[in-house]
Length: 221
Image 1 (tube, rainbow, N blue to C red):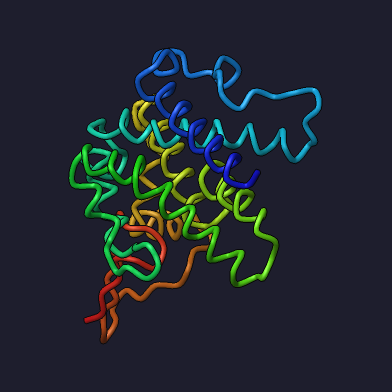
Image 2: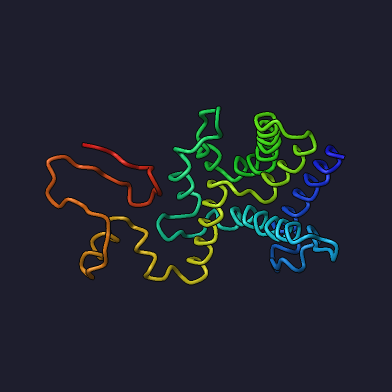
């Protein structure tokens, strides 16, 4: 039963991805018209949310390739932004930066269609082994990691894709300038908006890359 669910979820993942990437969902990407992960009257609230999130998540993966060479609000293109923000992120235990897969569409497709499902099943087995839960939980954990991930990285990238699409569709509104960390601090101080403290004439300098997020792109001099 566990193996059948894993195979079913994997099939639905590839089918749904094709629907949004190359199928009719590419031109009319509505969740209601997607033939995969359809809601059933017998679904529990948890199952309904899982199916809805699965469609949102897989659509956002297909969105990577639509945005790939499109202008980005803080870089020349979306792929350029991927190169910056994934260079300090790696699959645990590998040490291989994910930015390697942002060097071309073929490599990115290889990551999404091959390594992503593989890493999902390994992570599911690892979780079940560490938590000492039932074997059937492997299928459940695999389904979560592949179709509706709730880890910080997946949610961060989902948000990045959403923001990139919004800025593109609205011709990069002026408010996106605030994504430049230095511009945000300077403008916040001018308008008396509380911002994190920063030194204007320090004896040492901490340089934060204006486009890289979180704790990445920080240099000390």
